[in-house]
Structures are given as C-alpha cells and as structure tokens.
Amino acid sequence: MDEKVFDVSMIYIQNTSASNYTLEFYCRNKNIKLNFSAVEGIELIAKIPMELKSSYVQMAENMPKVWNMKMVYPMNFRISYSGKILIESM
Image (tube, rainbow, N blue to C red; front, top):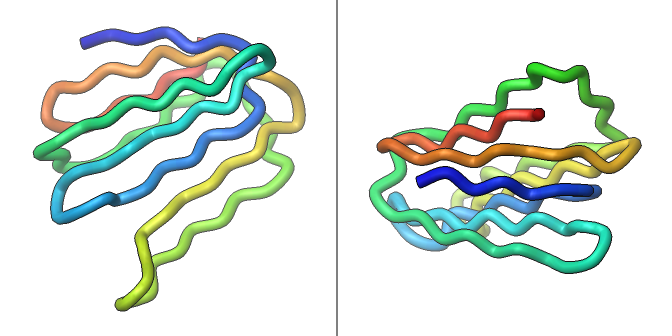
C-alpha cells in the first residue's frame, strides 16, 4: 500500500489497540486518516530536510500511546506499509 499526502502541517499517530495504529495527517484542505493493523513499528525518513515546530510522545502506562509532530512549514509525505509503517518526506 502506498499513499501520498500533500501540504501536511501536523501528523498525529495513535496506538488504538495492541498492534493497531491510526495516522492522521492535517493538510491544508482536508484531514486524512489511515488505519493499520499488525504493525511492527513506525519509521520516519526525512529525504527532504524537515523542521519540526514541536513534537510530543506520550507513552505512559494507562494512557493512549500517541506521537504528535507539528511542522514549521507544510510538507509532502509518502506512506507505505509492509509490516511496519514507513513515513517518507518527498
């Protein structure tokens, strides 16, 4: 599976249960939500340099596992999945 998202200002990643994850991309014109199951891990590759305004990871025991990233400027990404989720700047 390959998906391209454009003009992303924020990425919200949440572990919904066990090895299931939801990625939400806040874009200029719309929000895009992708759901994945049986995820082994998440990798972020910045082929084009990216600047983060802020990033927050929540890993507390009794809280939902989340990772938020706000970009300094809108970015384009390609998302692929083959056991692990790969988020790649383009």
